[in-house]
Length: 166
Length: 166
DNA sequence: GTCAGTGCAAACTTTTTGCAACTAC
DNA sequence: GTAGTTGCAAAAAGTTTGCACTGAC
Image 1 (cartoon, rainbow over the protein chains, first blue to last red):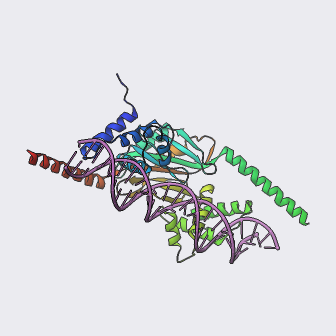
Image 2: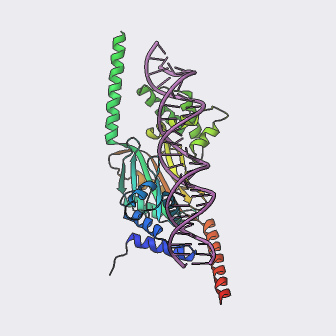
Image 3: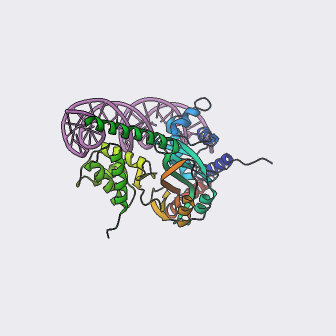
């Protein structure tokens, strides 16, 4: 028996939506959806276009168009990691989230059953939830060390300057 | 005894950081921080500048500069509601989150002790957490009704067209 | 054959940057 | 006085849109 992948589920949702709304199934949309579900890490619109450069070329406008549709269908989730928008598949429904260092921009995936459980038990106000995005911002230990080091150097120089003045 | 407000806490953090790093305390930064903490709902950079138009005028560049600093200090959190970036105070540390309708863009605040509790117990990987952003995307009941209605109308017209053909 | 979807390029919006003037220290 | 900060305007980056062409139904 074949295993049903998240992509299969997403494609089925997309196709039935298109069919029911008199919209056309195009190779572009399918290819973009596949590229999205093939990725293991969040991506920007431009990245997904570049990734498809050698397989099924599409324009950036089409990528944005498609992502907009996928967002409304809950097939894709949107994030704000750096300054640009990042997307990722939302099937299976979130079982992980991200931590971001606001200094170096490093994004790390975090798993937490407790959080997933708590979110799934949350009562939303008249909202049919399609996807959930959770993100913790802070300073990673690496950057913290660099900041402390730079700070110490600054303090030493300040002291030296004060001593020289005397 | 005076009550210490979130703004007071944020300002103290900011000032000690500025002092320790040889940066200057300016009226602009304080004013922007105050405007941010006075707001009850998330805001865009342009909105905060407009809000300050009649009290303490600053340029948009300064707003972005300040927000960047506040983000790094964990005084402000960043969201992706619509297409533009939204910010809000991150003190007190998140005790709420947001639900967004991807159709009409309506943002609603949701409180959930269970989620807050779960997040606070999560172990992050070498990250000192400054702020947390949680957002659920989906379709609100109002939009769902409109979509269903439009869909039904589409189906009826499709049927009518098919009948005419015969 | 019809009309939704696509690609291109131009428009638009949001955010960042260079530089001169200003001001906290 | 020095150097961090601000404001302006220009540039860059990211996203959306108009229109003619293409292709799914």
